[in-house]
Amino acid sequence: MTIETATARPPAIGLGALFLKFLRFGIQAFGGPVAQSAMVREALVERERWIDRGRFNRLLAVLQVLPGPEAHELCVHLGMVARGRLGGLLAGLGFMLPGFVLMLFAGWAYTAFIAGHVALGSALLGVQVAVLAIIARAVVRIGEHVLEDRWLWAVAGVCLAATLAGVPFTILLAAGGAAYALAARPLWVAGVVALAIGAALFTASLPTPPMAITTTTGAVTTAALFIAGLKGGLLTFGGAYTAIPYVRADTVGRGWLSDATFLDGIALAGVLPAPLVIFATFVGYVAGGLSGAVAITLGMFLPAFAFSLIFFERLEAIVERPALHRLLAGVAAAVVGIIAATLVQIGAATVARVSLLPVAATLFVVTLAVVWRVKGVWVAPAVLAVAGVAGWAAGV
Image 1 (cartoon, rainbow, N blue to C red):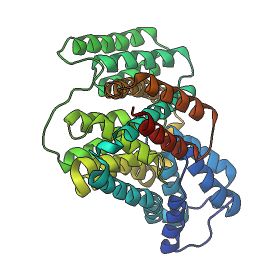
Image 2 (image 1 turned 135 degrees about the vertical axis):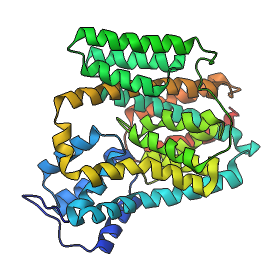
Image 3 (image 1 turned 60 degrees about the vertical axis):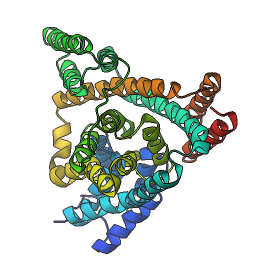
């Protein structure tokens, strides 16, 4: 099935050519979702007129309120515009393939040559401190777009505190979404908030150490890694950084890798041409080898394919419902609180490994200032490289 637009349409293109076009986009996909979407817009809207500008803007707005890496979902959608569902599948695969292959190689190199290398310990710790600053900036950036009124701020604040107290994120997402969806009905909101607080107090009374996820041990399974990726793919509201808490809980929380290694994966994802959620491939490889990397990546990207491939014709109609808007906004606010709490938890684990706290604090503040004020696709790779050198030189 080929789907066309009213005022613009893609040229006739074979499936092989379509795959190669989006493969080239994937090779050039540096700089995060904004830069990636802008690249696709320049090529397919401004130059080749696959769809008109208004349609593209509406499409991007729809994808931004759905979970999943929006640039990848955009490619799937535009592939469908050109050649139907098979075209969408090939476009999505082409866009993600370069990052997947590069991250597989990075995971192999890390486990073979870098992990456990004493001489590189300080350099890696410097990079991890810089990653914390980048995540902090991302939390603020997400919050600026999501926390639009006092109710949403309240949802985020409660979820931050409850996450640190050990409340499962599934409870918080449901409570946050319901609370904001029912914000016009104070009695309902009071009930939902009371339930959330009750769950928080009950969970906090259990013998779970605060400021940390519960760590269990067990054999690594491909199915568990797939589920970890699927959770991240389904719950990435507001940007790829929001997948971090869920993937961390199901991998670091099971004792399959350390927080330090987890942060190294995020750092590598930030400098590769791919959606940032490709960090899951690294996590899967370190925890479970090649099969683990494939499983967690399939889980992470499956929702991004499914939303466009299955609900292509209904996406705009669904997200136009005001009640759903409020529910999604509440969930997004809950996610802001959860990821902020995760930043605190990972930060505490990082501080525990630092031998020169003033140096690490200075590195964090300088990195945060740079990423706060300077924009460009080169910023993340540059600050991570400088942080690594600084960490090695100072012996952090």
